[in-house]
Length: 77
Image 1 (cartoon, rainbow, N blue to C red):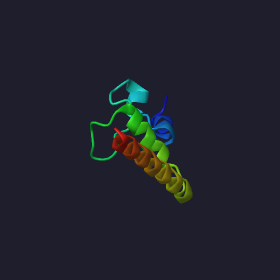
Image 2 (image 1 turned 30 degrees about the horizontal axis):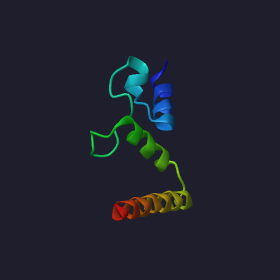
Image 3 (image 1 turned 90 degrees about the horizontal axis):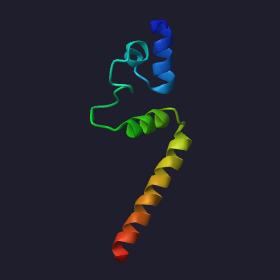
Image 4 (image 1 turned 60 degrees about the vertical axis):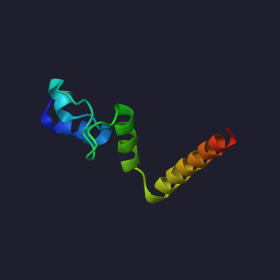
């Protein structure tokens, strides 16, 4: 496999090109300053980066709704 193809895989799917080519960790591209993010968090961030502004607003509204539900649940206990 070529470096160019590995780079395309990294950009499209978030898998580190060194991992694609040589099996070198980390498997997923390192994002941001938080090096302790789990793979599922990294995948979520990669997907969010691909969203348009309206889709991001919808995701944020969903997260806010989840927080409100969780707060309501905590207040009932």
